[in-house]
Amino acid sequence: MTATTTTVTPATGTAAVRVRGARRAFDGRVVLAGADLDIAPGEFVALLGASGSGKSTLLRAVAGLDRGATGQFRVPDRRAIVFQEHRLMPWSRVWRNVTLGVRGPGLRSRALHALTEVGLAARADAWPRTLSGGESQRVALARALVRTPELLLLDEPFGALDALTRIKAQALVAKLWTEHRPAVLLVTHDVEEALLLADRALVLRDGRIAEEFVVDVPRPRALDNPRLLTLRRAL
Ligand code: ADP
Ligand code: MG
Image (cartoon, rainbow, N blue to C red; front, side, top):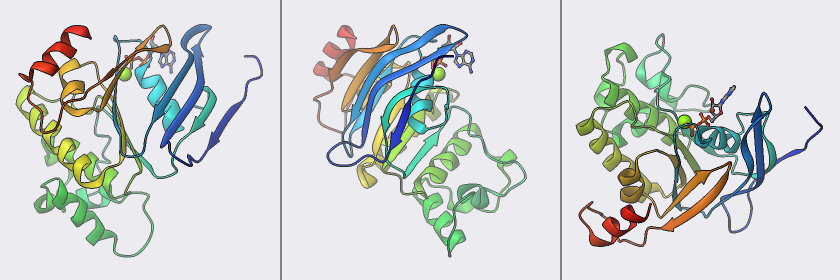
């Protein structure tokens, strides 16, 4: 690989996230071809794109998890990420999973507080294997919340859930965002999910943000909203 530079500095000023010229190739195949991305503080942005278009690659680069990505990345230090799989540690009880890697006093009470926000305080001492898929994702959300993130990165967090559980989890994310107002980058291939939740929907294509749709619809939103139906046809 040729010499490249990656700059990761804390976001300052008016942007929560500012990415310029994000590039990533795997074995010579270019996935990110100089993508730019801006997210304002407290803004909810959905990133759409076909399967394999590089959504997760861009999210991982923003998260600072991909040392092979290059470009300028200004992102908050306080960020948290939720993947499609919950990634809970099976050998730790639920509350310990929530505070894994968190330092400081009062960890259990902080975990309980976060678990209360996702409606799972009663399962604090349970083992992860005893949870349903939807509950596990809520624990993953609590694990993100306990870090009081300025930026919440969500990579298809509802993708593995059945339809009804997914709708509930979407409503929970909407509630948590309203109450805490982190900047959010939600990767999804579900257009309706993007339109229900986000302030803006971006479309990743050919390694760049190719389209942007402002979802200027007040919350709470319903999918039969005429404006959403128009946006959905455009997407
Ligand atoms: P999306 O999330 O939009 O479905 P990804 O970002 O996961 O897409 O992947 C984009 C492309 O990059 C895919 O073709 C995928 O196979 C490839 N890719 C992603 N990660 C790796 C990796 N670690 N090694 C090789 N190829 C990868
Ligand atoms: Mg993906």
